[in-house]
Image (cartoon, rainbow, N blue to C red; front, side):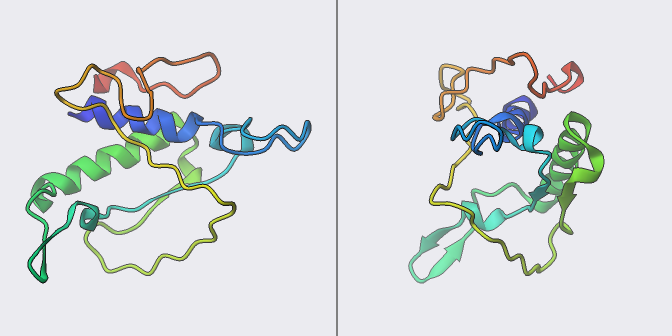
Length: 140
């Protein structure tokens, strides 16, 4: 299961979403190429569903498993990129996070299905290209 989520680390760091300032070419630069920071926030509410008028989070990972999993994900981002460019919040804490959504695009990064063909809904077949962040083998 960890391998599936660590592919998301590589995808976040390497997806070309930003304009190349030198050439003006859109969709040409990644977080790493632009030297941007990454903010990771654990958000179990993304797995919430409504049961009547009440939210239900039974699909989310239990906190005892989620906390070490989240910590390992943060560590993986820091090892794959620059430690000081990866920020995270406090697991389980109420946090006020604000952001500026720069542009008209929001991308959802998904990991391959446990029952699927090994390819995620966003077309990631797990290939690492030259110059991209790779997930070290110790997590596979």
